[in-house]
Image 1 (cartoon, one colour):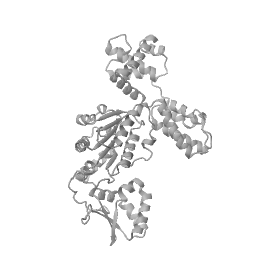
Image 2 (cartoon, helix red, strand yellow):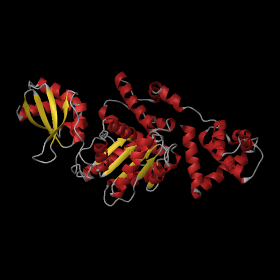
Image 3 (cartoon, one colour):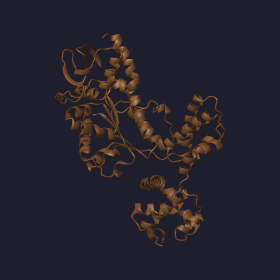
Amino acid sequence: MNNDTWGRVKDRLLESVGPNNFANWIEPLELKRVDNGVAEFSVRTNFMANWVARNFSDTILTHLKGADVPASRVEFRVEPHSGSSAPVATAPKSAQPVDATPEVPGAAPAGEDLPGAPLDPRFTFDNFVVGKPNELAHAAARRVAEGGPVTFNPLFLYGGVGLGKTHLMHAIAHEIRQRRPELRVLYLSAEQFMYRFVQALRDRQMIDFKQIFRSVDVLMVDDVQFIAGKDSTQEEFFHTFNALVDQGKQIIISADRAPGEIKDMEDRIRSRLQCGLVVDLHPTDYELRLGVLQTKAETYRAQYPDLRFAEGVLEFLAHRISTNVRVLEGALMRLFAFASLVGREITLDLTQECLSDILKQSDRKVTVEEIQRKVAEHYAIRLSDMIGPKRVRSIARPRQVAMYLAKQLTSRSLPEIGRRFGGRDHTTVMHGVRRIEELKGTDSQIADDIELLRRALEA
């Protein structure tokens, strides 16, 4: 088979497996020969040979046959250096794996694509809307992505669903690959790390696993809370973490909560995660939500140039959908698609008609009673003391926190809130709210408590 034929087969494989899989697994393959019905390819590593054999051999064989190549089987040989070759994986599955290569830190060629999760091309720094709730996280991510000496290690990003953690992770990876293409960047979720660890144990390929994960220049693990409670996975993650830190390699982690709040996480891992820069992505404020909507709307207007868009729609959505940027973006996408299909102007009436289920869900109201229970649990006091007459500081401060949250998260008036706190006067509530507003600016513990309670109540 000549190179032109293999080129046509690769074009079809690109359509079949997608650009990311193609770049990672198909493009590096080099077709050596087709002999006696066997199509033989050279690859760089044992890991790659076994991965391609398990996941893509049938697809490759199908397209070879479609191009009239006389192949009934594919075989992959490791050729890391010219002149050396060893068969490592074949299809069908009856082939036996060969022994793994010795562990050598940094053995993978510089710049080699690694078996990570695909990166979303939309998630770049250019498309990230910066506001007060996320400006520190954005600045830290930018600093890490610019390269240079490792200063924040690890960079730990945490926050609730839809606040931009994954967007920033992808943006860092895109930026590093553009600025420093020679670096080995590996991005994946904690679940994928766990799956590959278990698979390596099952297939007796732990040396290959260690070689891949400990030879990277930048390791990025999303949603690390999912390895909590998985003892063996935590053990391997801990050793991988230490090996990379000792080599001065950059680690970037994300989670839905701060390291100290992840249940069933080993203390030694929790301590390691806290030794770098820990940054919180706060729930979005109105200005940030409106900015996100305006940015997305410009994109959709280019896609639907004939659609008319009434004033006030974006402001309405920014007010009504307040906790999750992902839901906000999905709502706007649905709205544009619906208006395009029915051929109508995007008005407030159409918005309420199209997004009735999302708006109804966003209308879930937090009650004063919920706030009181949650605050009492957080500060380990009795609910009866929360609404009772005691004025000692250990009870009065949580009571003021609960009043502040009731004012922020409910539509109740100050007199109504006062009645639910044991019949207190509205001026007492006003004093409590003002006191907490003052303390938020000077007492970091109070500010953290407020933010944690707000996320728990709005979840």
